[in-house]
Image (cartoon, rainbow, N blue to C red; front, side, top):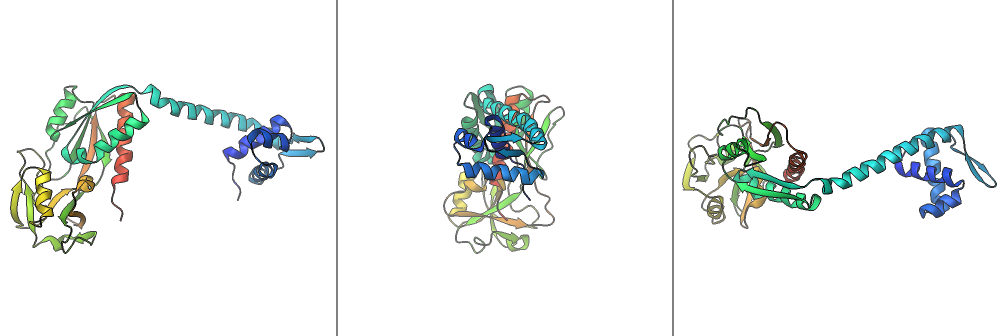
Length: 302
């Protein structure tokens, strides 16, 4: 079934204004058959003839008059929409301070900042990395406009009263393994496959998210403890064990390391949220929207 289209409305309006298919084709840069096809499609969509053909041109039928009246409003609204959207990049200006926990700062936040630089060139983005508890404190103190933190099992409960939580990424954790590991090419594995593995665990400060072995394993074999992600992943690449890491940072692993998902019915998963004050500015809302859009592109394929 034929459908109404903006291009069809535009062509019909031009035919009505100029009084002929030939003149409309010349004005729009189309061939006359192309104009005829657009008009025919519109007539099929509404179920009525729109133009009465005559030797010296065309005139509107009653149905055509109704369609052209609506076309004027619809095309005007479309032009206004395009103007408003195009003007966003000029309207949004100033500086937005964004803080994020390390996993979000590895891929999500840098890509978001790059996207914003192209979309809103007058908007400056300041980036800060830190533990979630510090980010929440800085947001409340006005040193940040947005704090990207992780929430879920095994993470501290932060005082978020008075702050707005924007869910950015409802992802999970994954496991980083050497590229030649027996599980490397599987994509996803059941948690039981990890039972006998040797683990490289984090050694963060108290209150920081701790990434040890997979959280539902009993008595895992932890062989090494290191603080930073580069060192952890370097040990993985060298074949000295495997490690848990946020799925959000999976694209940041170095050569020699691959990530795999884990099917674990007991593990409920974690989420990344962007915290803002109760009444965020238009600039802050634009950053949150872009964070969500970029995060959607980071989700692994099934």
